[in-house]
Length: 219
Image (cartoon, rainbow, N blue to C red; front, side, top):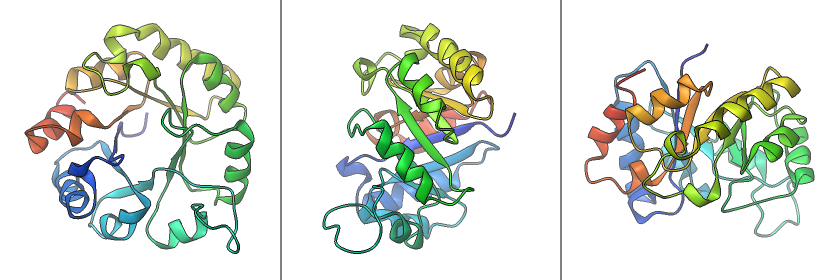
């Protein structure tokens, strides 16, 4: 297996926007680990966060539009030129159609990581048909909570892994919702996931460096 992923979604938390985004990105880059650390930044912060040495940065969303008359949409090529090295799509807080995901994938380079989010096994199976790089399974009711999906519903992780691999064995699985610590990460990996997607566990933490170190402590 490749290096496990720790994907931190900055969302629009005040502790992870503008100058705070740069500081959080630097803290992530400073973690000594063999894990693959990924910061998922707002479009506003792509340029500055992606300038941090040693940090992989993804966009929080992209739209399948070209350059031209598309006011308000997030056009992929500009995001790439501003530092996006990947993207998440279809997050529970920004749902899109399966056609949106399909059309976006058709516009992006073959080596550009795409993490499609799924609320359940059925949605993960449908997304797997498209062949994104990653599928992150996140039960919406657990997002932002204090109980990790690996504790509350471990079966959804292992069942998603089985379902996705049956459809497309090349797709890699992440899990999220309530992930807070290194034990959550280790449990996710033991269930067949290849990393985690989290936000508030880092962005709202009182001791961000300590949380980041803990997240990678058992892998």
